[in-house]
Length: 347
Image 1 (cartoon, rainbow, N blue to C red):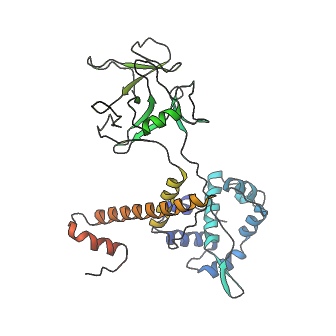
Image 2 (cartoon, helix red, strand yellow; image 1 turned 120 degrees about the vertical axis):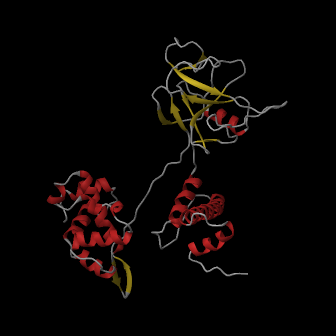
Image 3 (spheres, one colour; image 1 turned 135 degrees about the vertical axis):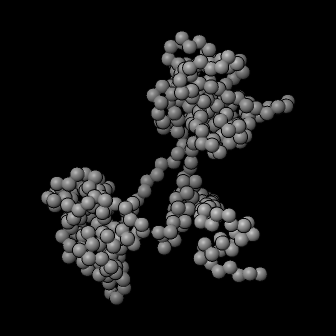
C-alpha cells in the first residue's frame, strides 16, 4: 500500500485528464501502468488490499467514512494514516476497481460492482434567520414567531435579499412562507424586498435608517429599539390603477430579476444530467431517471430532455466563443458543428 507516497499523488485534481489519473494510480498501487481492464482485474484479484476491502464491507452498504473505519481493523498501515489520507487512498483504489474487468463465461464483465450514490435534498422551505444569521430548513409553511424569511437572489447580478409581505399602514412584516410565496407569484403590491445593511452607519439625509425588530418583526426608525438589525426595505411597483410588484433588483435596477433561492427535484436532476452529458470525461452518455408517478415520469422525461439540450448548447456555444475570440457570427454555426464533432453539410 502506498502509505508513504505524496498525498497529492492520489488527488484527481492534480492530473490533467482521467487517463493520467488512472495511470498514476496503477503505478502507485501496482508499480506499473498501461494495463487494460482485464489485466487490471487480474492484478487486483491478487492484491492484499482487495481482500481487506471485502472483509471490511462484509456484504454491507457503507459510506466512505464508515468503510475507512472498518478497513483499519484489517490493515495496520492504513490505520496509522490521518483520516483525510485514508479517504484519498480509498478513492484511489476504488477508481482501479471501477475500471477493472474480468471474463465470465466468455463475456467481459466488471471485476466488482462499484456504485456511487449522491443524495441531494430539494432546495425548498429554505429560510434565513436574521438573529443567528444562518440558513435553516422550515418545518411548515405557516407564520413563524422567529425572524426567519425566505431568501431571494438576483439572477442578473447575484445580489442576495429576503422576501416578506406587509399590509398597508402596518409597520410589521409578515413571514408566512405560504402567503409570501403566493404574493410574489401573484406580483402583489404587498411584496417587500429586505436588503440587509452591513452596519448601522447613518444614511444620507434624504434617507431615514430603518431597523427591523427581531422580536415582533416591526419596522422602526428608532435605533435605540432593542434587538434590531439595520435593513433597507424596497417595494417597487408599477404605475397605474392596479399596481403590481416589479421584482426589481435594488442593486442593478433590472425588473423581473428577483427569484426564490429554491430548486425542486426536476430542476436539480436537469442540472445533474446536463453536467453528465456535457462532461468531456463521460464517454457513456446514458441516464436512467425513476419516479413514483406515471404523470411525473412523463413530465420529468420531457423536462430533462429540454433542459439538457438547452444547457449543453449553451456550454458548447460558450466554449466555442472562448476558444475563438472575434469569430464572426456567420461562421458560428460551422464552428459549433465542428466543436461537437459533427460534419457540417452545406445545403
